[in-house]
Length: 154
Length: 386
Ligand SMILES: [Zn+2]
Image (cartoon, rainbow over all chains, first blue to last red; front, side, top):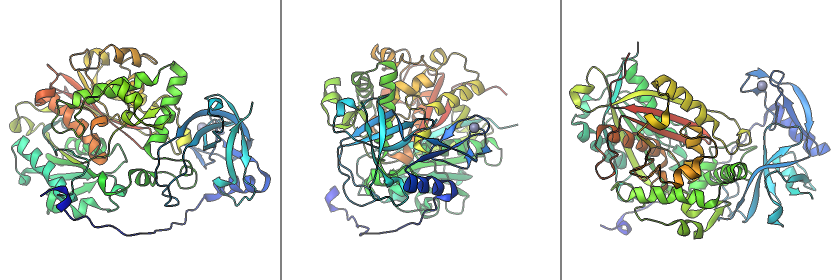
């Protein structure tokens, strides 16, 4: 028998929506983003690192964090890539529009990297260490999409 | 005191991009039968089974339950271990723990995947945080590309340096009948292949594969009765380092650095470059072959491109890496880490045929996943001291 002779059964258009809790720290972060266009992170009382996304515990020190500090909205590109291959976005079921800039942004005052889109109108400017600013969405609903993208500032 | 543990048999399927002729449990059975045959023992000799894969690739949970007919787990203790890309190495470490505990004498360890059954990028995305990590995420490749980008910026490496690693592994695969991609490629072909995510080209990354692997471990009480050339497990280590993708130090694999230091300390290895004879590295893309052996302490930071470019990691070189052709030639994800373990064991046992490295005393196999997690095993020809 050849591969064509074996039967393959399709799963059909299965949909399984989830309802994810963002939690108290993430919720506060997104409210600040939506209402005041501000980024806030949590600072570890032991090692002093500032975490974005904010979370209740510094994993390395294993201590609770509750000191909020403002970071960004500008920063530098910590690392990046430009996505050029077509793939289905599992969030939407649609093909993701490519190419797009994928940035790990070091927001001013933060010690971890924040992932978001980078505008790639001028690819030659997209480099590690380049200064970037956040461009906020006109309509903000309290999610990661309240930022449209980051763009390189000269 | 822990029992000494050895690998006494290994088995693999002939890995392919698509195996529509078998379902999951039938694929698993091929590897199990091969391992039992290699060890020359029966399923009734097996005391417990550990199995693992990445459930979301097939969209079917609880392989520990539904694979019983194929795995040989009927009326035996069976547990599942799944840790993402590292799964295949984690099941081996789990098997080592079971046998070393003295509670089980002979344990069968299985890793498998049918990557052809779903969209790989979609499936991998489900392993990442839905609130913070998924908006820009593009499967395994985006993070790896960011790692390579950061490494290049830090050390001045080029795309050609990455391509050299793909060329090595694809050449090595010619000697391994179990590998999926068995066609030599050139540096120019890698650089001319489509750019997936800067600086990663199509030929810099692993394929999607259907395949399974199995390993049989036995305690010192029976290992030498089963085989005259057991592969002794000298040490294992694993390290996890982050919650969100943005927490990682792009350009360095800190979990590999920590796990290696722990592994070599436990195994009494002082100069890994001199003492290790072969490495089977879970290296899903070319730059991992450069960056991660630096973090392993084989060479210093930034020295990878030159060391590899000079042929030191080719077959016949100072320290051959991936004689099997590695992950770039074959990647049934849940099996991939265990294939590294199988291959390292085969090298120590002298069973690697066409891709045998001569006189192997110590071998290292690794698992990578998560991303940025590391699992490691130190394999040796001599029985470890107590
Ligand atoms: Zn801390």
